[in-house]
Image (cartoon, rainbow, N blue to C red):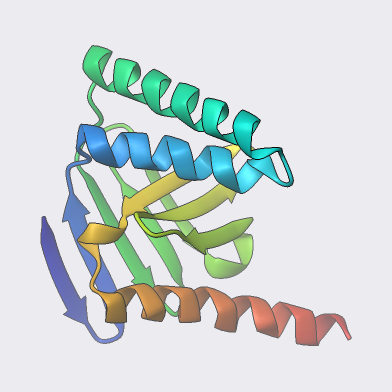
Length: 140
């Protein structure tokens, strides 16, 4: 895992582990679970994690480089490249173990929280908040 900080840009490179992929599946499920009764939430979490681990064993993910700046986010793997301004993201949520980046209506990418320091995590959330609070102010 590599980190760098250049002129307000946070860049991290990481290789997702099986635990990262399971944490991502769990967070993605829980963020969409809403007010589901806890027994169903626990079953859903288990199924999401199990399926993610099976998928990881069949086809491990590629290393990823993620860059965050006040202008937007850039994600790059061997098979995927995206450069999006913060306003184009559908959402950004930090859980205990992963940073979820909603790059489309049904497309979610993640960065393991372990790849970013606490200060970097807060900076990324601030970049997103600043860009989207301008949108809300412009709408009024």
